[in-house]
Length: 154
Image 1 (cartoon, one colour):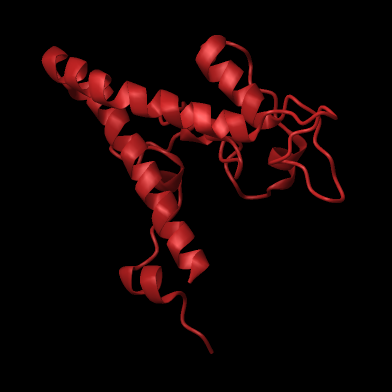
Image 2 (spheres, rainbow, N blue to C red; image 1 turned 135 degrees about the vertical axis):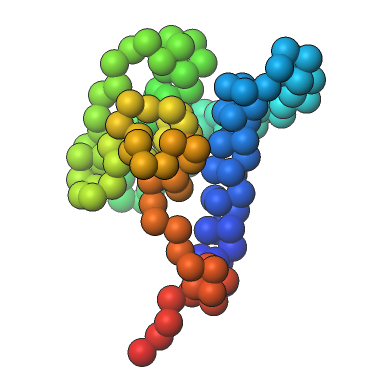
C-alpha cells in the first residue's frame, strides 16, 4: 500500500510541475502574474521546509541524508541542488554524482533524491513526446489496472 501511495504522490507532484512549466511557456501575461502570485509563495515555502530538514547537525552532517552506517557531510546534494537552481541559476555545469553513475538505465538527471530531476526541459528529452515533460515523461506509463493493483502476481 505504501508503494502505491508513494507512486500516486510522486505522479501528482510531477504532473503539477509539468503544468506549471506549461503555464510558464504558454500562458499570457495576466495569467502568468496570477499564477506567480499564487504559486511562488507555495514553492518557496516548500523549498524552505525541505531545506530545513537537511540543515546540518552539530557534527556537520545532514540528518536526512545520513544513515546509521554512512554519514553525509553538509552540504548534502539537496543543498547543492538548491544553490545551483536558486542562486547560481543553473549556470554551473552539472557534476554527475556517484549515485547517478551507478543507476544503469536511468536518465542521468533523474536522481531519486534530487529536486534537479524536476527540471522539465532538457536537450536530451526524447523528441517523440514533445508535450510531456518531467521525469515521468521519460518512463513508459504503467497501464491503469497496474497503477492501483500493482503488477500481476504469478
